[in-house]
Image (cartoon, rainbow, N blue to C red):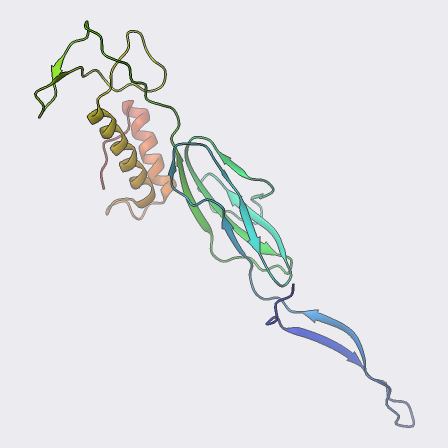
Length: 216
């Protein structure tokens, strides 16, 4: 459906003979002038998820119609030479920066690059009942003695290891802190992009074997 506000150029023809008689006016063609860029959106907003996500991109243009949606998933700015959207984008794990924009059939492109930041944390924490042989330690602030081995991720080891609620909350808080650092930055890192802040964390983890302890 054409936009009722789209400018229309109409070409008409009328012929006058030597005697000064005018022919009926005939419309030869009508042209729609499209100067409005399309609009695009993602089906799922950027956030932290615990399951893989499938992101659909859509475009709307009521005049000439949408042509393409261009996107990247590595944090770089997309151009008309970037990958074109054809099917849902699957994000299975880790941190992904999705950037995209659309273009219509009249050659108009969105001037705003849309950005969505996705973090997918997969895997599970296993809990097993303590055995008599396990060492007991008093939990701070509690008079009950409880086993306090390290937090376990992924598959169960042998012998089983128990994770306390405090340990789980501490690790969850650290994941949120790192995600907030990447997405929002701190006062001294706001000038950096999300991809650059992710690179800082990757470099620290590679050098020291663990993520930095970060709060904002």
